[in-house]
Image (tube, rainbow, N blue to C red; front, side):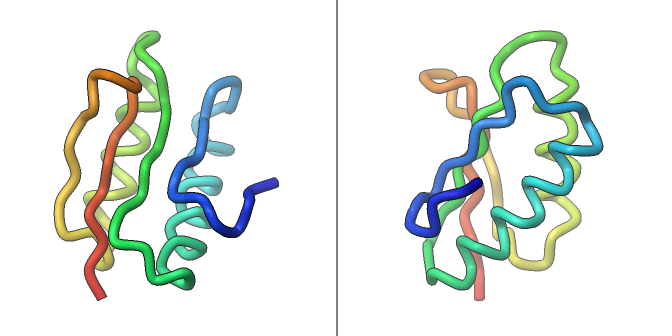
Length: 81
């Protein structure tokens, strides 16, 4: 499970529906810890996990903006309160 004090979650090996739930739970965890950012590591692959990540962040009222981080194959979201 997630460490309560981390901004990052790794989606490798998850199916799309598992990833969506994990992202939503991780977003709530980051908000509860008053973090300013959330990092979701999804890798390169075929882009399914990246697409799920971006769709989930786009729909969230708590994400100000998000961008792709090529160094970590991750998406970074800036949180708003």
